[in-house]
Amino acid sequence: MAGILEEINEPQDIKKLNMLQLNQLAEEIRAFIIETIARTGGHLASSLGAVEITLALHYIFDSPRDKIIWDVGHQTYAHKIITGRRDKFKSIRQYGGLSGFPKRAESPHDIFETGHSSTSISAALGMAKSRDLRNGKEHIIAVIGDGALTAGLAFEAMNNAGHLKENIIVVLNDNEMSIARNVGAIASYLSRIRMDPHFIKVRDDLRWLLKQIPAIGEKMLKVARNIEEHLTYMMVPGVIFEALGFTYLGPFDGHNIELLCSILKKAKDMAGPRLIHILTRKGKGYQFAEDDATRFHGVLPFDIETGESEEEKTIPTYTEMFGKTIIELARENEKIVTITAAMPDGTGLSEFSKIFPERFFDVGIAEQHAVTFAGGLAAGGLRPVVAIYSTFLQRAFDQILHDVCMQKLPVVFAVDRGGIVGEDGETHQGIFDLSFLRILPNLIIMSPKDENELRQMLKTAIEHPTPSVVRYSRGRGVGIPIDKKIEKIEIGKAEMLRDGTDLAILAIGNMVYPSRLAAENLHALGINSAVVNMRFLKPLDENLIEDLARRCGRIVTVEENVISGGLGSAVLEMLMSKGLSGAVIHSIGLPDRFIEHGSPSLLREKLGLTSEGIARTIQGVFKKVG
Image 1 (cartoon, rainbow, N blue to C red):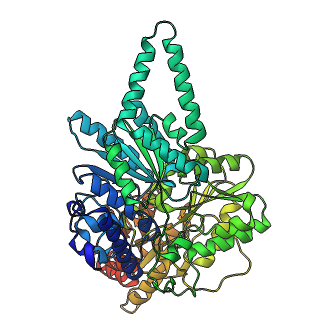
Image 2: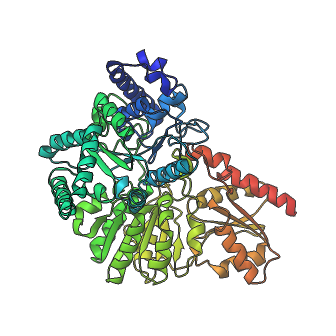
Image 3: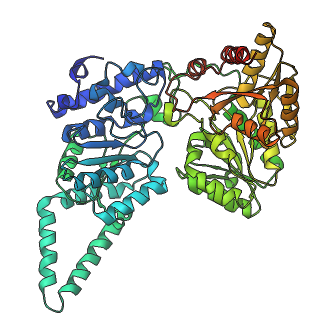
């Protein structure tokens, strides 16, 4: 890092720069981001593509008085760097360091926390209405990506904003959509004219004059409007936004700072809802990221010269094993179809999409639609598998309840990233799924202890006649041998891994192996523990749990999920219903709070979810109860 960036400590500092200096600053910021993320890992491509628009926004507007609301946080690294966090940027996504997403507690310039997409326009509209009710004067700007605009929430917000005629600016950062070459220059020219205040005044005056002409004025005005609308349809790729009540401006080159500043300055003085459409390139300034923006969307530490990650790949991830297994099963069962909400690579479905393109559906960032769409596919006789991250499944709770479970439709939810995710932090930790899914009738919920059991559970789920969930964690498996033939598991049947008489440890998912190792450590201390791989959260293996409660008198449950409503709650409720409330029960899991960012291994250590932590907790409980 050198040059201009060293002198930028707050947004006001960039207002002193000329356009040549702003362009130099953009290059310095890119170099700084690449250098840092190569060491820490993070979201690279999106932030590299948003450098110029970030500088232009802060150059024209006065943050934090003016509110810049970022949709998701993948594009906010430059924003963090120029808003007083340059010196801390090397700690991004590290435990105790900067969050990888906007964080209100971190800076007054982070107006709204956004880890899930498509929320910025709704939030901006709420802030704009709040401003008006208290007679405020600040500008409200929402920056949203073209992918995020596929979600219904974004269009609901735009529809409402158009109806209210609220004074907000939406910046559409488009790095994916195709714009016809012969339209761009014309659209840019027309937009420049339409933004000119003199043009707007002349147009409005003309409309007023036409309306004054007796008898034919309204007809002439209608003809004029029809001509304007037809020209818009033919020449400007923003008709849908105009129909929603927005003044559409663009598309413009999102890497031309001078142009962006000019556009934003003019849009700033306009009234009503405005949408500025800019075209950017993901990964801008780093060739590897430009060539493969998907791979460099979220990266582990990498070598800048080669673009290669330093991670070893000897053991497959759960995601990779899911992708491989679903292909195997689909070869045998032609009714299997798969659905993703804009995450084919992240959920392991890319290869499936190539082999079975007609049986693969990417619905965009539209989780609610994905679930109901799956329900429709199931009602039509197919076996849909919805591959989705735990944290994003939260957005479709009502659809799971109403459109799948209530109708007992055989939809399989392959819930990836269950439990602690790590560096993405609070918005992405998948720590609530066992709790919010367990309350739904007709739903089978299972979680594998290893990658081989994942395969068995997928087969079990696909061949079961009611809805089911297979929930697995982020990262690599445990490296066990993989059975060539995939066998089903008996629904609700747990697996006794180790018998014991002093207490029983009931673990689920990725907590099974640490619990078994904890039992071995406890055995050396004279505590003889049974260990059970629960496999199923719903239904529970009630006979086994009841037997262990009677024999041992002490039950410890272990889960990588919030304690409230999870495995521990399920076991306690079941034992109470059996009249066994005298058994001592202790739940090990996650506390009733949002979990900060940090490496998964570090977070598990601090939260007591390692074998040592589990053994230590059990020792304390054992001493208390005698």
